[in-house]
Image (cartoon, rainbow, N blue to C red):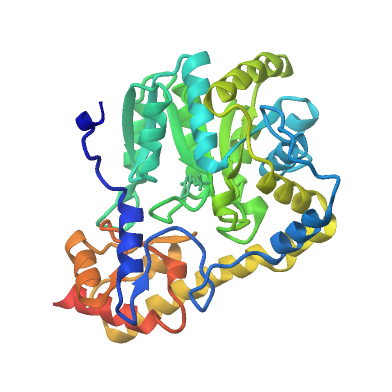
Length: 403
Ligand code: PMP
């Protein structure tokens, strides 16, 4: 019975977010949860999303019938094209397809269960550090051997590339390697193109399977193609792979749970049996996905005018530029204050997060003394900063570092 249920540990990011909400201090700052905020610290519903939703509300041809188990075809094919580039030969050859999933997390979950059940993979590698949910999702999908590869060098505040390569070289054949497609969470540091080439060399040689996690395409640099470079490079090299795509950040559709699991195979004849097995995985997990967010994204990706508005003219550029500006602003305030240490990594990192290098003690000091909430690893959500609070945050960091 229920009396045997033990209290589980809290999820740090949600716990800190709640502490922030309950804090009554006027100048409190929330740098915890990974969601976009505008220059006034407010959430932003993208204008293309609002517009599409208004049109959908009036469209009486839209019904609430079940979607197919693998999702809305228009959405999954638009997602695969966005990831791989619409002219990618693997699409024309029928070797790539998508499965609509419950955002990026759902893509990881369905993909991992498929790899475990049907390719019999049991070992997975995640970067140290990584998004804290990778471990749990893979273990819940049937993987039994969790391992990590080195990624972050705390001293240089940069990628530990030699460590990464050494760990991949030591990985047993058929290990699944989780790779962040762009805007590595939490460090904000991505491998360079040359480094990706070396990673691909080792993975080919060691017969390791790439599982890309693409939660920030377009959001990271403002350029969809640039942010998909690594995935496309692996495809060009002839890898079979899977990639979980999330539309939480780039469309701001966090709670709609819009995602896609893209799968690239070496031969089109493997597609039909794999789709049939994926159908059974989804059937046994949640039966079929929700329609609303997928319709919004499918409409925006396939309508030229809306797509231009989202991609070229403003939305993703606006969000990524604001993040860049805040990185610059924070670094320049710290330099102005003469805060000990080098703060260049703040501007060299990309995406929503900065791994500041602040210690756990310093991070806790910021929360206790200044009501500035951040993860204990020193990870901050950069767009929690705005012109109104960046000086306050910089002064607080200066105090934490120098005291
Ligand atoms: N992977 C990474 C690296 C992420 O940062 C996130 C979002 N925090 C996700 C996956 C998945 O998020 P969601 O399920 O909301 O799409």
